[in-house]
Every structure is written in structure tokens, then in C-alpha cells.
Image 1 (cartoon, rainbow, N blue to C red):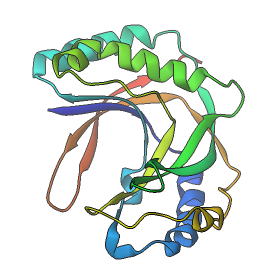
Image 2 (tube, rainbow, N blue to C red; image 1 turned 120 degrees about the vertical axis):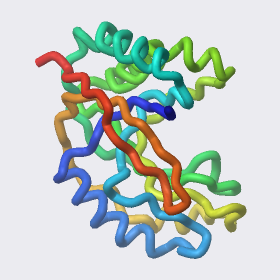
Image 3 (tube, rainbow, N blue to C red; image 1 turned 30 degrees about the vertical axis):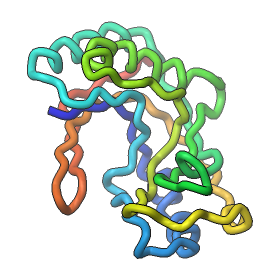
Image 4 (spheres, one colour; image 1 turned 90 degrees about the horizontal axis):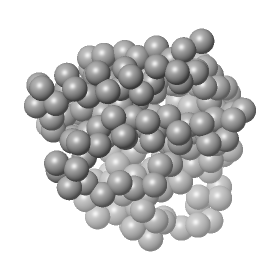
Length: 191
């Protein structure tokens, strides 16, 4: 099974981001981009890839232990961008940061990544630096470079904060119509 750990957006944050994306997304050539359905929006903390049932069980145990003393975070939307670059855009994203304690979100991601270290090592994955974000669109093959001035015309992200108090271990099922995500385990962060 294909697994990843993530935080969900609050209903309010999701609604505000959807309203923003309705405006911002108009500047893109829709034929070049596959927009991620709103119900699939999340903040990935760690991607584990394909794991066996036994590896998944060990991952759940390790996440439970590592997240035991982690407290909820207050998150906010902050900035938007593309991976890997405007010249070669593959992903369009909205940034997410810890509103009150810079660095805690990255610490949480590191805890989740360490929990899956054995599965990451098994598949030889390179661990990219963490950048808190919600993926909004993915390129359909090769797309035109994005002009910096177009990006500067994007409206500012809404000013919304929410409490993230649960890490979900998601199972991702890839289908022709797009990925489907199901939370198979929840880890409540300590109040």
C-alpha cells in the first residue's frame, strides 16, 4: 500500500483557499494543468511510498511513539509558488507555516519522516528539504514556463489560521481519474 502522513486543513481554511484559487487559477492555461480536487487538499509531512502490511504496522507504532509529546500547531497560509521553478513548473502550491512558533511545523515533518526512515531507506528515496504546502495543481506533461509578472499578479493568500491537532496516516490509491486518499490511522497531538 502507498502511504503518507499529513495534516488536514480546517473547513474554514479550505473554503478560503478555494475562493482564492478560483481567482488565481484563472491565470493558468487549464489545458496544461490538472487541478487537485479540494477534498484531496492536505499538508504532506512525510511520504513513505509503497509499504507492506508489516511495515505499515511498524510505521503506526513508530508514529505513535514519536508524536506522543507533540502539541497542536496553529497554522496559516503563507505565500504561493511552484516546484521546481517558474521555468519548469510541475506543481503549483499554497504555502503553510506555523503562525506562532516558526520551525515547529518542520520539526513535526521531521518526526514523521524519521518514523518512516526504514521505508525511505528501502526505496532509496532522497529526502528533499521540507516546505509546508498544499498542492493545488499538477502539470499535464510539459507546460509553458510561467512568467514572474503573472505570478506577481496572483492575489494575496487569505489571512486564515487554524489549529492542526491530528496527524493522519493516509493510504493513496492511484486511479485513472486521479488519486483517492483514505485516512487509515489518526494520531491526536497532545493538548
